[in-house]
Each structure stands twice: as C-alpha cells, then as structure tokens.
Image: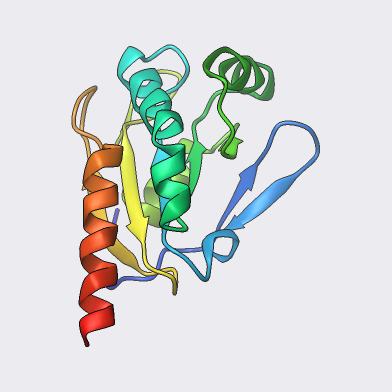
Length: 161
C-alpha cells in the first residue's frame, strides 16, 4: 500500500456509474481542480453527511471550476438509491474493488465484506494530488469549506507567480 502525497499523479482508475457508463480518473477531471471521494458506503452516516455537504457546496465549487467524483463498494442499486435519496448531481461510482483501490491509492480497507475507509484527494488541473486525506475509521475526511479555501489559495498563488 502506497500513500499518495502532494505532487504525485493520481493513478488511473475506472469509476463505474449507475446505468451503463463509466469515467476514467484522473482524465475525467483534467483541466480543472477535482475532488475524489472514496467512502465507506450508503450505510455510513458520516459518508452521507460528507456527500450532502459537497452537494450543498456545489455552487461555490462550480464557481471555482471544481468537479467532484465519489466512489464506494456499494452495488449499483444501492448507489442509485443513495444518489436519489441525497439528490446528488455529481458522479457517484459503484462496485469498487476495495483491494484494488487500496493498492492504487493507499486507502484503508475494513470490514467483511471489505469496504473502503474515507479517503479524499484534491487534484490539480494536471491530475496531481494537491492534498490527500486518509482515514482509518469512520471520522476524518475532506470537507467542502476546506477544499474551497485551498483551491482559492492555490489559484491566487498561481496568479501571483
């Protein structure tokens, strides 16, 4: 398991979306800042709160050109129900292989059947990690206000250079 640090490229991952689609990370977020959220599943109240918070912050994130993608081990039906229940408008992937995600990005894995502990990345426009947040249990995760503040800081710093 390798943890990703600032400046590391996000390894390529396929995110299966409800329906027939999928997207490729980090390519799907290229050209702007991105947020990738791995969560425990629809059963986790902390994960639900995080996803709702990112949805509520959509306008502020859109102003900065930030795109959000979430992913869990939940199956397609459960993920579709979560999207509907929380009224999520950003892509939410399903059926992640916990062991493969752990190998690719260093996410902690717990439980039986295995699920991903909360892991989040803020990516720069080139798909490199600006910030990584790893949790080994239920709490400790990216929050939208911190992401907005960080991206404003990074954008201002780049403009001043």
